Amino acid sequence: MRISKMTARASALAAGVLAAALPLVVGASEPPVAEVAERGLDLPADGLMIGFATVGALLAVFAVAALGYLYRRERHLDWEFQKPDAPHH
Image 1 (cartoon, rainbow, N blue to C red):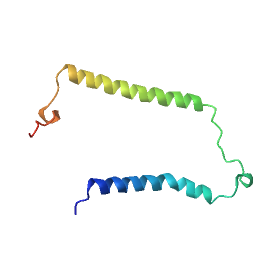
Image 2: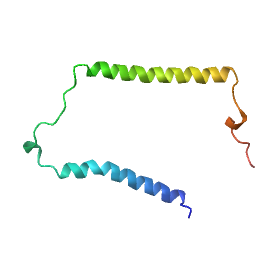
Image 3: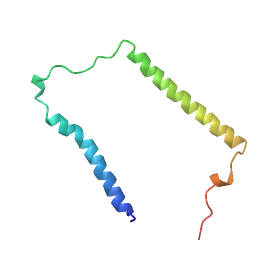
Image 4: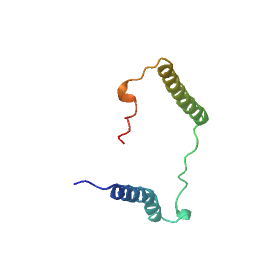
């Protein structure tokens, strides 16, 4: 049985709404804020350094990927299966 695009999109939208609503349902079942002890987490001493290291690692990965793309493009390392299909009309 084949599912239409509209049905698939509606199902994806419903799943997204359900996933977004779950925290609201959990929050509604908790006691009022005045009765709950402080549950927030403090930033670790090296938290800022961890954040900078994460951003730096992501930038390094993107830089390596960009260099690989530029190398492939300059050397014309393209294969037939990578090219777009010819129009059918």
